[in-house]
Length: 162
Image (cartoon, rainbow, N blue to C red):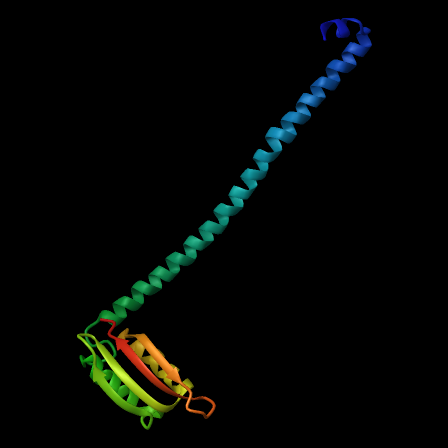
């Protein structure tokens, strides 16, 4: 290599040196600098997304704490009644009164409920309001269609939220 460079004229050697320098700079840019800056940009974007997610989670966590505090107050929406009494009385009120067939306790803090020929929409609304009032959750649900559109037979197990 040295012999080849020595055999070149001074002007040609300068061109080779400059070309080599430019080649080295291009290699450094395309192999090192450009991928590094691309990664930095991706990480900065990821940080912004993660911060937005964290903010959303903090807002949701505050809402959960607020709702838990509201539902854990003594008698929050239930006036101190048992889950069985609340389920029975709320189901007998409104549109589900005729469809309610049986309510019985199941274990310490759960209730089994049977509906026949109930409106699906009314039952979903009832479950939602029951959950808001007591924090109770449906742990098991079996639904059959008796034939009429929008009407169902349902068997639920509701567990207390307190």
